[in-house]
Image (cartoon, rainbow, N blue to C red; front, side, top):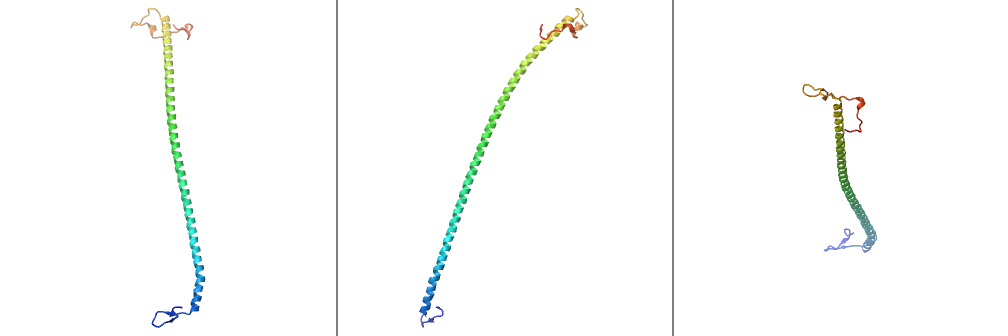
Length: 168
């Protein structure tokens, strides 16, 4: 309209049809508010979407932090359980070593007493054999080296065997 309007001589002014300009302004008033309202709705919707995205982001961050805290707590519990298990294992090994030491001492004591009893029994057996040798040695029969022939041989009369309970 401005480009098609009549120009006033010697000025930059243009003459416009008043009715046409007012009609155009009315159309602008009617159409602009719809576009402004639509732009406002779009802006509000963008704000809601942004707010929803921010809320979801905060929720995701909160869940991640909660999960991280839970994992740290679980790791701490596992570490504490491992420490406790190591302590129990050490204590059990120490107790087992003590039990083994006590069992070894007991076994050594029993074996020492058994050795003493065996030595006593062997001594009694030796005396019994010597006594039997003395009974059955011929008197005065000597060998070339001055020993009696019966010194190397054990002669036992089956009817004169000593009982296990008798000691010389």
